[in-house]
Length: 130
Ligand SMILES: Nc1nc2c([nH]c(=O)n2[C@H]2C[C@H](O)[C@@H](COP(=O)(O)OP(=O)(O)OP(=O)(O)O)O2)c(=O)[nH]1
Image 1 (cartoon, rainbow, N blue to C red):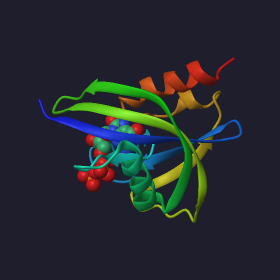
Image 2: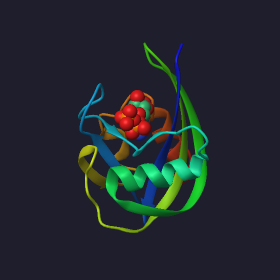
Image 3: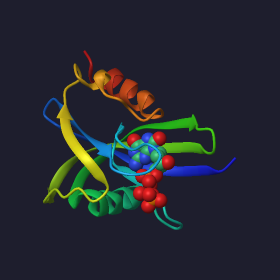
């Protein structure tokens, strides 16, 4: 099966997490963590900086590895490396999404997540729920 390797940003500020709603494609209108495919020769962190700049026109800093999620979709296998980070600059523009919001840990389960992201949400809760 085709393997797709993706990086995703779990952007945090105070007690909230920044989530984005897909604006196109198979998972349109479902929530995800922004990011995208690693290009040949790219390091994971470089790919994440590039994707967040392309998709949202934001800069990120303080990347800290959170988890790698593996998920079998019907037509590909997803390997997704997720990094906690903060916004360090830029002005938000939605170039790939049709919505964004900041959610607390109390709200994070209530979203219509892309299937693989349920495991990311569980990792976030494991790390931050006291
Ligand atoms: N970015 C992102 N992709 C996710 C998440 N969860 C999940 O299953 N995916 C899947 C959906 C896509 O099939 C794949 C990432 O593709 P993408 O469309 O974001 O990547 P990209 O920007 O590099 O690609 P493209 O649309 O330009 O081809 O990973 C998530 O939280 N964030």
